[in-house]
Image (cartoon, rainbow, N blue to C red; front, side, top):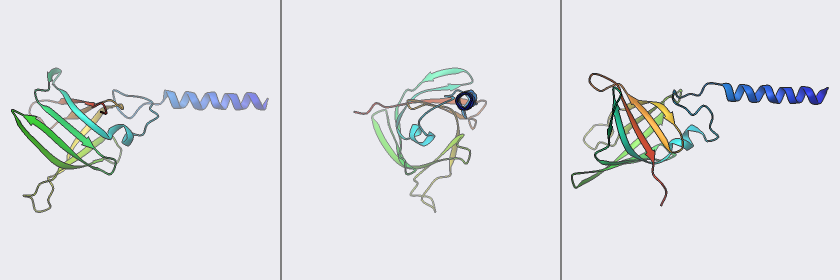
Length: 148
């Protein structure tokens, strides 16, 4: 009888874990990696979807997020290469990511925080929703760059 009770408890606990809703709308519902482990690394911009229409990235833009909350955004546009240091953090519920750029011209040395809602976060893909654009909602899709 004890074995049956233990087995039923394990089955019930497993069912509760795997049936619970994930934090992000598009998943994953279950991950063995922490959110911080999934978000850190170097990401490349794939496309931006505005009100349902996808626009592939025309520029080479990569974002590196380090575990300590620092990082950099680098890009190449029309033969011009630029890079800027950033700080990043999750909001309290870890449903959004906040990023601010280093700005030598401001009194604090940093721009204001920019926040994007995380729609999907896997180890290789992330979708970020931004509602600060004019006339709509944009979803930015980034993909983790392969290690060399």
